[in-house]
Length: 498
Image (cartoon, rainbow, N blue to C red; front, side, top):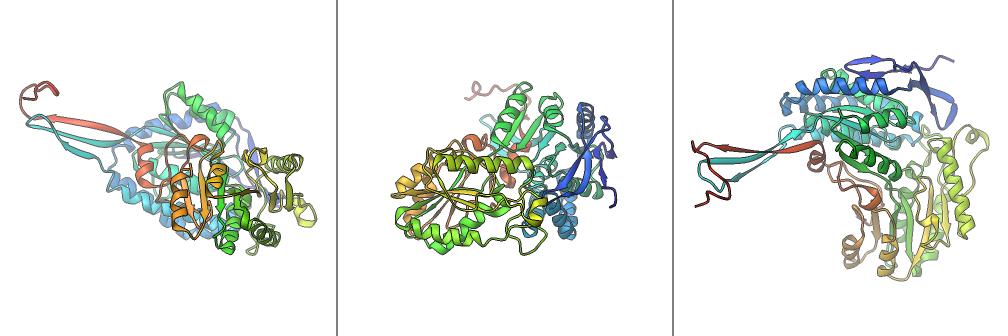
C-alpha cells in the first residue's frame, strides 16, 4: 500500500511542518485499516506563529474594501461547486457519514459562500439625526481582529464555513483549529482559500489537540474572538479560558432535542421525520432527535411503525449509495453509546430495536452501531436527560399537549425541537412555548438552512447565532459610532439642547 499523504499546517501563506515534528493519523471509521492521511500534532509554538501571522495580516486585510473581500469568497464557492463530489467522498472516508449527507455538507459551505459574499456590498450601519444642529451621527461595522475558530468533526466543512466566511467578509483574520477526528475537510476549505488568492496570513490552519492548539487560542492575548462548536462541557471550559483576556466568545453546543407527536399527527410523516432526525449522521448531530414524546392515544401505533422502519435501515460504509446509517466517528464515541445503552437497560427502559454493536464481517473493521429505540422511558432517566450523540432515541408518553411541552422543556439544553400535528392552533402554541432556539412544525429536528439564525439556549449556546448573515455579522464585527460636528464650535450633548 502507498504511504498515506502527509498534511501540514498552513501558517502565513505556507504549508509547514509543526515545530513538534509529531503527527497523528486520520483513519476511516468504517475501516480502521485505511489511513486517510497524517496531520500535524502541533505545539504551542505553532499556535503562536499562526496568531502572529494573522495579526500582521489583519493590518492589511481590514483595509481591503469589503466588496473586494467578498469577491474572494464568491470564488471559493465556485471552486467548491466544481469539487463537490470529490470533497464529499473524502469527507465520508474521514468521518463516515453517508455520501448523500456529505454532499449536503459541502453544499452548505457553498451556500454560505454565496450568501455571505453578498454581504460584502451591504454590511449596513445606521444613520440617525443629532439632537444638535450642524452635526452628523452614524454607526459602522468594523472587524474584531484575529478570530480563533474551533470546529467539530460531525460537519467538517459546513461548520468551518459558517465561521470562516463571515469572519473574512467582515475584515478579520483567522486561525482555524479543526477537530482531530476530521481535519481533512477543513484542509480542503483552507486550500481553496489559498487558491483564490486570499493574501498570506489572513487564513491560518493548525491541527492538533485541544490541550495545546485549543488552549493556545483561548488564552492568547493576540486573539480577539473565539468561535466554538462542540460539547457543552468543552464550551464551558472555552468560556472560562476566554474570560481571562476578555475575549468575545460564541458558543454553539449540545442538545437533547425533543420531537412531539400529537394524536392528530400524520403518523407516517412523523415516522419519516423521526428516522431522519434520530439516525442521520448516526445521531451525531447537535440537533439530532434524541427524545420523541408521543401522545398516549397513538403511542403503540407510532412505536410499531417506527420500529419496523428503523429495523430496515441499512448500516454500512457511507460510500455505498444505498447505506442509510454509517459508522460512529471513533472507538471512544462507540464506547460512550454502548455505555448509555446499558444505562438505559439498567434504568428499566426497553430497547425494542438495536442495542447491540455490529461486529460480523465488514462491521468488525469499523465502529458500527445499529439504530436503537428505547421505549418505557420516563423523564427522570439519564437516557432522557443526557446527550448521547449516537443512533439512540428514547420514546416517552404524554397525556396532552401541555404534558408534552412540559416534558420537552424539562432539560438542561434548548437547541432544536419539533411538533407533528394537523391542528394549527396546537402548532402555534408549541412554537411559542418550546424553549429552544429552533422549532419545526411537521418536520424533523434537523435540517437548518444557512440563511436563518442557528443556535440555542441554556447549555446549547450563549446567545449568539451563527448561520445567517445578519446574525453572524453581529459575532464577527464591532460597532463604531461616529459623530461629526461641523458647527465650528464646541457643542455639548444633553446640555446645549436649547
